[in-house]
Length: 305
Image (cartoon, rainbow, N blue to C red; front, side, top):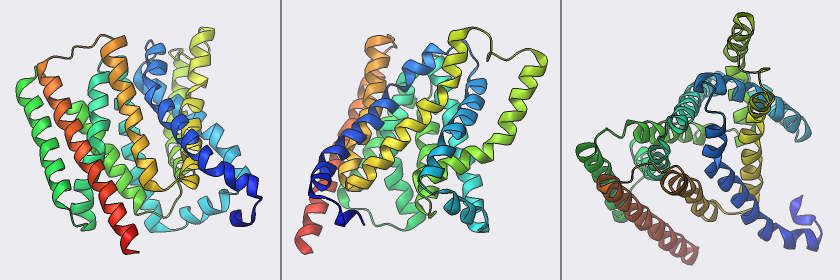
């Protein structure tokens, strides 16, 4: 149906794709600014508000885009439902740890976690999907592993935050890749599965008078905005994915961890000593190798086609 649209609409699609991608990854990259602004609220309380307000925003969007029948079919399929329970657990862990890391002054660790995520994805593809690795990909994964190992040995603390974020998001992506659900419908169902415990926590907080919502005006507004912080970048990502190739979209993914890195070092003054410098240089080199290899592989595939 899109192919029969007007020529003016068709001409704007290539330009709008990168703009949507830029909006999505910049929003994710600036996420630490939001979570630092709400650092007075415990990370687990921010998480339950994020679940509730994200679902509040996604439901109308799902109705408008006619995704509710797709969601209903998914809930009737045992295999898909099991996959959703697994992905829901992983994204909850990932969200909670990221919020805690930002509030605890560990944005640099979070940045490293999302930098190693593409390399974790390559390794997971080999282990679980039987994907064959090209020589450059093997070199990149080995270099990344050596860089993280060096950081674990030489730094004053183990990079458990980076590893947990990178692996949990990688496993989440693996499950979602093998589940026939689009990004928005999947996230809507995941937040719906998290809704009962989230509402239970909010009711307990209200009954005991320990909740932050309804206290100061600024805190209440920031908690309510957690849905916007989560849903708007996702909707931009979905719009970008419809207008761009996955290869082109993949290069935008480095915007978010780069933004985290710049915020951590230049705005929040987190220590960036020699072990961190060496680890990041190794990871960046590995990412460069993988990116160059992806470009070459795509050109060869296009020529063969």
